[in-house]
Image (cartoon, rainbow, N blue to C red; front, side, top):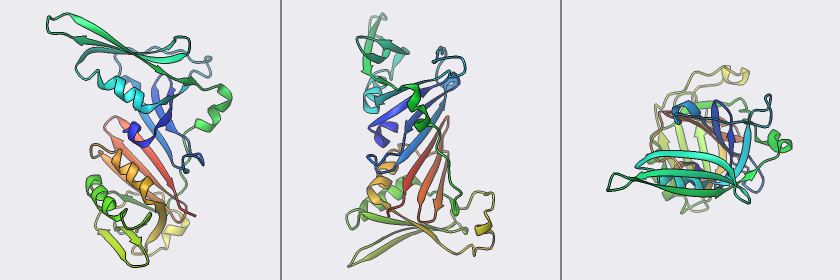
Length: 259
């Protein structure tokens, strides 16, 4: 999932949690991602030592596709070990123990080059603050949305996402020749801490945000399985924030509005 969402990302390692982070930069078009995994759900043994007792964390930058390829070889493995090593340059070393036909095992090792991020840059890699949303709505089946948006991208690069407090979500594109809208009804709205502005708003009133259709499609392409929970938070004319839960993995993904 992460490899489809971000070519390069930061891996943050802490005693209880791992994070894959894509910080919002102009180069990345302002898209950002925060993915969180509780380590105890993935590892039977886990040892790490950060910079100091009070800053017990490690940040490394890596090419996510390289890590994905290495882990893919471990699908039928007896065991898998991930270590931070130094082999003339810092590496994330993935050691995979595979069974062979004769019941003996063989080891396969992948050395993935990483860049250790110095402490002074950590402040740019903290969990993003989520602005108060104007509308929060549950998403329909992501596969359905993806097939709709894939057809729309042939007509326009801009997508208008509209939602209201009545469980309605519209995906809309407009060009000089045509206007196409797909309506999703009765999706439901998660309970929100009411903002002053939403309290007196008509539940039918739509809130909208214009985004780059390719960025939205990239987000949808990254979702291989339908999540256990999927919420879309719209901040009118500023951004759209997706909050997904895949069993043990929490993903937040932010797409800024087009100016």
